[in-house]
Amino acid sequence: MIDGVTRRGFLGAGGGMAALSLATAASPAAAWLQDSGAPRAIGQPMPRGAELPATPPRPRRPDSVGFAIVGLGGYALNQMMPRFAEAQRAHVAAIVSGNPDKLRRVGDAYGVPADARYSYETFARIASDDRVDAIYIVLPSALHADWTERAFEAGKHVLCEKPMALSSAECERMIAASRRADRKLMIAYRSHFEPHNVQAMELMAQGAVGDIRLVRTEQSYRMGPTSPSENWRVNRALAGGGPLEDLGIYGLQAALYLTREMPESISAATFRPANDPRFAEIFAHVSSQWRFPSGAVAQLATSYDSAGANFVQVQGTTGALFMDPATNYSGQRMWLQAGGRREFNPGDPGVQFAGQLDHFTDAIRDGTAIRTPGEMGLRDLRLIEAIYASAEQGRTVRLNPDGTMRA
Ligand SMILES: NC(=O)c1ccc[n+]([C@@H]2O[C@H](COP(=O)([O-])OP(=O)(O)OC[C@H]3O[C@@H](n4cnc5c(N)ncnc54)[C@H](OP(=O)(O)O)[C@@H]3O)[C@@H](O)[C@H]2O)c1
Image (cartoon, rainbow, N blue to C red; front, side):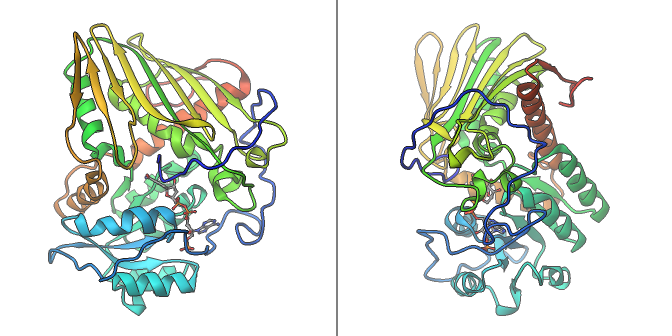
């Protein structure tokens, strides 16, 4: 599993190279998903396989931070909400959903009082709910910016899922809203709290492979039959270009936190098979090559239409680091090849979920610095924009040190 996506059935794929302009309007999707106009929050059925706790968890400490969870989908219900019980001072204080039945069932299971269960329409009332200190946005990506702004307007801190948003302009709006409200903004980049990835960062900082020459990453799986009207992940208005924002962003992040450099140029290609409803609106495959000021190169691939992969490799002048799988929920493996093979087992990857909650609550309660702030999400959206611009224009794009494109 990468990001909770399953590798399901196979579809035939044909067609050629296509650079689908991200500027083009999305085609209309079915009413249950997206009725018309700008993307908006609409309740969905209970995700398949959702497991609710038999007994409601309780806050561990009196200074525990109360979170309102916005969007009770697969990731919220199956991954994050169960992990609050492992966090030191975070608890689920409120829930926000467009599905009244889910509000009732999830609210009962988590012990959320009836007056702390909000719909998207009643959300603004959360401003006067003192049980809620922070809002956790777990909505489809196109809704992150608006709901983050609403959360700041309500005077709350915000933990926002990845990708931060679908454009750098949205990210800038979110950061400005955080500053206006004088509230914290963190992007839920869980790998920064996962022991293997943390140790990989340390190893690279110590020069464990010598000078880095090449980074290769791939995050892919083959998506089963679906269409933009039934699945927001293949709906351009809700998901942007597709696999890069969803999965490839883990490889993009790793290339940055392992090299500790920003690329100075990017060249990229996108692929979209013809006559495939999965890829009527989004790309099937995005690959890019980055050049860093040190001379190192990164090659990143991500796909919704190739056999499952989730690896990161770093080749240096004296050795190589391998992570496979690199950024899953569990099962990480990592080894260094440098005059012999050395395996690393720095800890249970499962701690990444509560780890990011603890990190954010420390920032809220103790004023500590946030490792994955809005500015990091903005940087990454700038690189994603550069990747799409390069593919669309068929040229190498040169970048400023902050990731913006040079004229
Ligand atoms: N960090 C990670 O490892 C990780 C893993 C998976 C996902 N994510 C991120 O988490 C977010 C949610 O992903 P997910 O996998 O949980 O998605 P999901 O299972 O499809 O759930 C999304 C939820 O958002 C709400 N929603 C509101 N408006 C919607 C609309 N127009 N279309 C669809 N859903 C709408 C619904 O909740 P209600 O019915 O309660 O209103 C829905 O259940 C995304 O940003 C994704 O990138 C992160």
